[in-house]
Length: 240
Image (cartoon, rainbow, N blue to C red; front, side):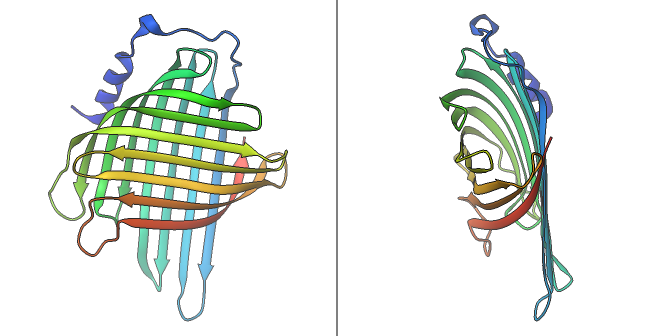
């Protein structure tokens, strides 16, 4: 069964009899965020690194949806040194004002990591532990399945996983905020984790600068490849 089909099966399996609408929740409509960052070094070493992402989300009294994509591309002295992109989509159905059920699908491809690709689908329970205007804290956990292929060889690691996530955001004032997001996909063959923490400062109503540190971790890697990758970025952000 292909990942996209399994994701639809997981979504349709959500127990409709226990779903309750939160009539007081606002319909925020669709909103989005685009990011772009470029680092260029010239001298003893010539290098260029380009990063970018796009995310769209929508929330109404019953449903919450999100889709997004991101990429990383780097060259050093004319040689390609980084090439990664990932996409995701998820839909959640509210049980109460703070809790919901979620179906999610994610695909990551990396030309310089141990795994050429990792497909995951999951069904999770989510809870908004803190839901204030200035501070939000949300947790998600549930079962899933992963399809993964090692780089350069016909070896596949397909397994059941546990997916967990955490999202934290706090606004110090109207212009300055911090964020921290964590995703963990744990299985017997490999546990993948990515944490993104940073600071966002608004320049205008729509434009902002964001400084972040992304840490990616795999427990199972090929010889010569490190378990942990760190990426420091300063991006221009456009909110719409």
